[in-house]
Length: 462
Image (cartoon, rainbow, N blue to C red):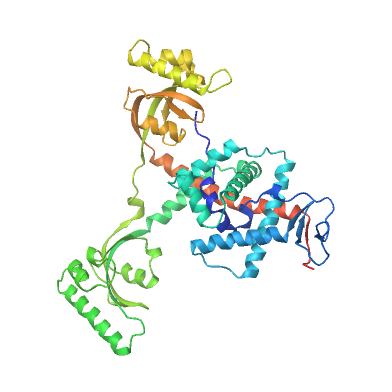
């Protein structure tokens, strides 16, 4: 009953932009789009066409398949359209062509490996479910996401195939790379010890600012006048003027009306000029007037805190829940399952039977022998449809009929409790960081290995 997470589907909708950014090994293109060529030829000339009217030709041979120049051009055009729609900076045309072609070579080699391993294609039901989850994660309906894709220059049919291919590639990577990643408890301990040592000296600063802007193309006289204004504001603060009121009066920053409040900032993410000036202050003090390329600044250190002391406890709510599951089978239609559950719900409402009794008699789930008891669940342990219905119930309350990918349910919340997961959360986060590092390295190495094993022949455009 616990959910199987499909890693990286959320980012699949940004697939094309990632290729353009040079992440050639992580993308996918339809392997079925190019028919296998047993004997590569110099170019394709349709029957009856004149020799000078070649409408396509081979760009590269990958093992026993070819990638044509038209395929490359279509991919480049699709990426350019997407990048322009998103306002992303465009690389040089030659660099774009090279990156796209290399990505397609790696993709084709990986798809060939998936075929050799006998991986089954993603069917339409799985694909529709995945696209529905992507839309949900983007807080859109599928139709709204479709409109957005087409607005950015991608047909929905193409988008569907991109997602289908990404799922196939993810399954391949999980088999070849993900499942081989191992992380020991000693590695987690070492990571946490290093993080604790680093955090002991690391602080966050709560800062406020007054900014006197220097107009573009200012003359030396204008710059001096702006400096004099900043100096006067600093003088008023030093003799007891209220920083917030002076910010609202004199600051040209967008945060002026909130008293110049910038909020908590990591010093590493501040301009070095600001960070070094603030480091010498105690809470409540201000910096001298600091000149940047566009303004004069007066910074106030409102407060500072040690990161190790600012961590909050991870209190997680757990829910103990029971359910009765009726699956849709050739012997039991969806309508029959819903009707049966409605009858069981009526018996529960009339108190003519207990939930445990009905679960043991009717549930199509391994939990039936335990009266439908699934135990205590953490957030994210079950599919969203089940969790949403469960969270809406009070202890002792029974839901109406709930549909999930597993079938139809009646759900009863038994009790709830809070659990301090601070230590477990830290270890889980550390394990994920270590895993991500190892996975990135292993995936790159695997992609290079697949690429190096492939026979690749570039064809001259002539």
